Structure formats: C-alpha cells, structure tokens
Image 1 (cartoon, helix red, strand yellow):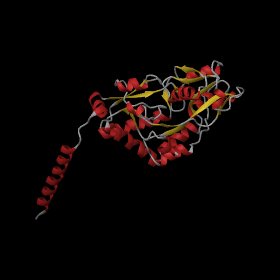
Image 2 (cartoon, rainbow, N blue to C red):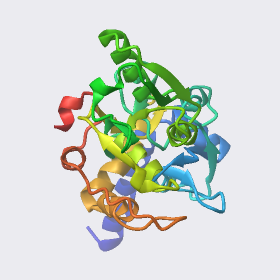
Image 3 (cartoon, rainbow, N blue to C red):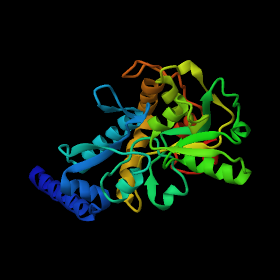
Image 4 (cartoon, helix red, strand yellow):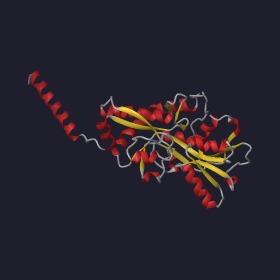
Length: 305
C-alpha cells in the first residue's frame, strides 16, 4: 500500500471520528442553551457582602465569590467556544436573589448563599468554596457572651438569610422572648447594632467580621458564643440543569486542584482589600480546608467536619 493510499485512509478515518463525535455530542440545554442563544450570561453581585461580593468606592463590584464566578464564566465561554459572550452583572439582595434566579433574571448567583436542604428544594449549588459558622456579634460592653444571654434582647439578622431562620427557630424552641428585627440587607442589619437599636446580630461569622472591620469603631465589637451552625457557600443556579452543573463544578474543581482558589482566598481574607485597605485576618478554618481537600456540594454540615 503506497503512502497516498495510507494518507487517504487515515483522513477518511479521522473524518468519520469527527462526524461520529459531532453526532453523539449532547445538544445544549437549559442555561447553556440560553447563553448560546442570547450571547449573554448574567452574574449576580451583592453590595455589602465583604469580602465575597461588594462594591468599592467607585461602585465597582468585586470580591472573592465574584472572582470565582467570573473564572467559571470564562471556562464556560471556552467550553461553548464562544469567547464573545457578554457577561452582565446584576445587583441582588438576600431577599430577592432566589426569585431573580428562578425567573431567569440572573443565571449564576455569586455571594454568600448557604447551600441548605431547604434551598435545594428550589435551586441547585456548585461545589462549596467557603464554609462559614453562624455566630453572634455584639458590642463588647453589652454583657452578652453567648446564646443564652440573648433572652429578652433585641437581635437583628438580615431578611432571607439562614441566620434569620435559625434565630427564629431558636427563639420558638427555647421560648427566649427575643425581639427579632430583620434588616433589609447586611448593611442595614449591622446599622441596627451600630446605632443600639439591636443588642446583637446573628449572621455568618465572616460577614460579621467584614462589617465590624469596616465600621467606624471596629474595636467596639466582638464575636461571642459557639457557632450555631455550619454554612457551606456555593454558586447558586437553577435546578434540573445538569449541563450547567457539570460545567460549573468542573471549573471550580480545577481551581481547587490548581490552588487558584486558595490564592484567591489569601488575596481577599488575609491581605488588605479595597476600598479601605482593611485586612480581615481570617485564615481558612478546618471546615474550609476540608471543603477544598474533599470537594462536595453537600448541604450536610457533617460533611465539612
């Protein structure tokens, strides 16, 4: 057999393989189909969830969770072979983030949303990129040192958060007669404590650390008591969308394995961050390291211990 015949046969075989691969490729569905058809992907951000997703002095969205989501978007564009897809950022709040996801206004929610069993009835989550603990923040002169000291006090937590739900459940179960005051968002919730309209705030530890660090008098505040719960954070997206789930998890797993997420973490939690150059000095906990070393999308706190 001469070289021309061999080359022709090899070319035919390669074309057959390409044709078979094209025919067997799964057609786009769900959010990836929407992105391909519209040429746009909508990513949410928060205005005060330091250092995950917030705005700087120039009203520019930035943060750890946003960095992760934007990297996921770049990987999705590469997978779709559509580098010109537009990435649009959309502001959301704790109260409207799930409704805006479900009605198609946003495609990826990137902030401080806890992956919980209750939320999984409505939405889906990626592999976890952070694990928080729900704690109590109070002023150092409040006399509050733990959960039992909240009895009869006014306590704030922001609307739509797992912290508010946990506080409500504890108040009912333990008959603590807590006056629960919801804030519209993180900033308003902290303001209730700052202006003495609340005795304490119950929320994720890192969010409370961020709010206190950016306040006028950071030294006035302290986290007290044991963690009320373990809260894994992940990218949130619509349920029953296996193609998007696979693409997002593939991207996050790659970032975890390469150490890119650890580097992002150091940038946002252990170094000065804009706009005030504050260093949160929040090294990764054992729960966070567990999530990095054993990637999981579980809502079960036991899977992060």
